[in-house]
Image 1: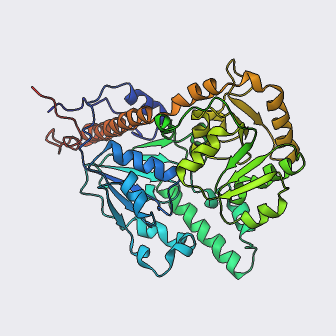
Image 2 (image 1 turned 180 degrees about the vertical axis):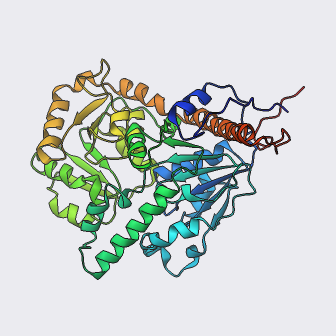
Image 3 (image 1 turned 90 degrees about the horizontal axis):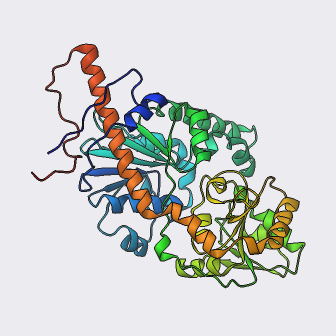
Length: 438
């Protein structure tokens, strides 16, 4: 069995960005895909972007086991994407009708995530938008964290979430504000637990640096390019597809199209805001509600363009639209900046970005797209989407876990140099290193 060559250690191993970059240049052994990996995911209420990432990680490591606070995934989803994968859930998952109020239990989630015992696994990969990063690991256990987002409602979006929930400074509002304060304290304390952080976009990477003071590698989520058919001849309608939460700003798109009745809009998705959104819509706007995946793909593939006005951390839906050859008209902040090659900034544009979340900005971007539609080709959109392939994601995860392993070895080397520990230190990577035939 070949072992990883130990890089020379410096202080602040795993935290200082320059040191991480120096370690990343050090060769290390290939990771054994049959290693026992604990994959910790916040919760699985349904199959969206975060769960797509989770499924792909489990596919990379066939012996991976999932630890999650809540698991409400239907059997058919489990059979298709998680066949043979063992799921471990928290005690809260057994509460009566918990599907209806699990988000309100956020104040218990840090405590409950710490109750998962993952210390017997070869390595830990946390898939985190809130709590999973805080899982307790052994000091010598490689821990790679894939960050979908720092906790939105505890940091920069606290006030908008409280406003949407109607929580002011009454007794209930103050109680929630105090719980969010405690969550921020815990979130900051656990920020340096992982050996390496990955961000799903440059936008999230900047938020990680600002909130936690850590550098992160950008690894975009996987998109099943081969499963998405390129459609060259488009129908004469636009599409928007999203979970209808307020921050998605679907209301702006609906109002922009209501003012231009000659343009058709199809709205895919059905959630908390649907009644309000329907009240804004003119006769040129059709709501499909929830669609099975094959019907959803067909809708975005045949659309003239996809319109999106929210600020997403990444936005797998946007990348899937590009893979189908569908141009994007999107708000130019967040993950859309990583996905779209904007008109006027690229020799091979794949969409239009607008700079304000306002009705007139959405309408103006659609006008600009229609005037320049011939310069944005379905083939160019498809080619752009190949940057987000599943194979590229697999290699990036394996490379990052190898780097996390190197960080562990560097930390052990630093400890030996500082305290004179004997060279017989327990091998922490043997089970992760892919065996080499002699």
